[in-house]
Length: 303
Image (tube, rainbow, N blue to C red; front, side, top):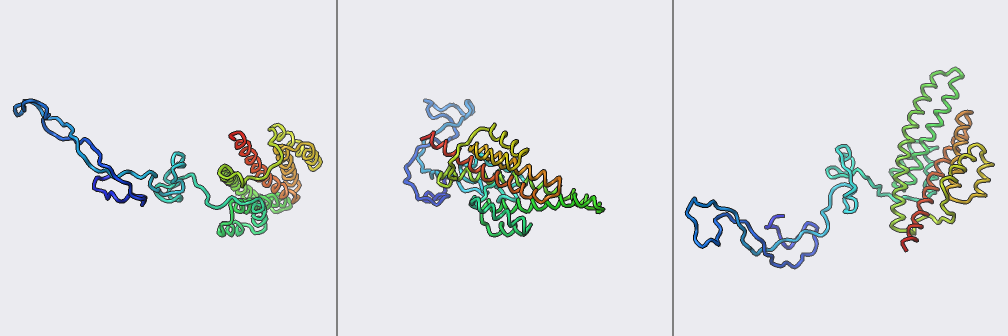
């Protein structure tokens, strides 16, 4: 910072601080002054030395200057990743690739409404939800709804193709490829929403889901998933009644969803759509519940 800067202002428009004179050492060229007699010219080279000088410095602001991009806070600067392609979309120069959605996370009902809207009003539904800036879960649900419909169209094309419409194989392949790509995008969106929910819960535990059941063990998740897959409905009901942990119920609903999805894909039954719904609903609900339990356990341990 220049010494000629205005001492009554700083870059953050903060209140001016009282200034105290400070003593600094300024470099000066020439012969050392503490020799009893100055040496003859050219007999000793001159060397820089430092003399004390009193001056007033403008203190630097306590908080860093505001930078461009969405990760400009001091807490996120160390985790901010920038790249050429990212700066074009995240605020120009200084933009951060760790984009944080400013919309609220939302409730589970928002996800349900978005899922129905995206299924019955494809493409237009996600655009409307994004334009209205409702919540992250509503946008995620509408996105999944449209992708579910694309996958159902692909399955319908494959089942109708053997009847003589061989061009439907190509159409089914195109819709299947788009569905797989969009499902991968949906997984990334789900992780982002769950991360935002975890951040919100860690800041304010009041927003966490009221969970009564315990977390459970991973083995319960695997066992429940396998039983519900091979014994749909009956096995799911038994696991839900006799194993009340979150992971066990999570595995039961997810196994039932995969059973419906594969059965519908093989037979061409619309029950495949119900299977997709069960998988996506269980992913969102139970993962949020698990985050709430983990946050509650951490808060209790720290207390």
